[in-house]
Image (cartoon, rainbow, N blue to C red; front, side, top):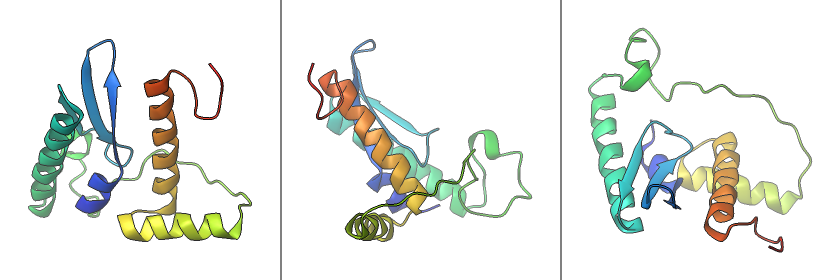
Length: 132
């Protein structure tokens, strides 16, 4: 578990139904911070990440993974698929740079990018670059 990666990849969105802000990361989808402001949601999210990280360091498993005590340490694998694509060399360089700075995998960077794009759709009511 990389605590900084979890915080780095957090996205905060407003939930119009519940009228609250929600902060979460695609890497740790079971940890969610909820607040009346984006800052409060983010602060709660980061506090929960810190608590989960301490439990992780103590060898405790949280959530649905607690019964898997024999599993090796680290983030539990998600239901994933392989993706192979051609991108511009500068794009690959930027994705790798983000991955290294955030301390997460390239796949997690792509998950973050999609979650961020979706959050913009929710915020603006449409996808960036599209008309309404």
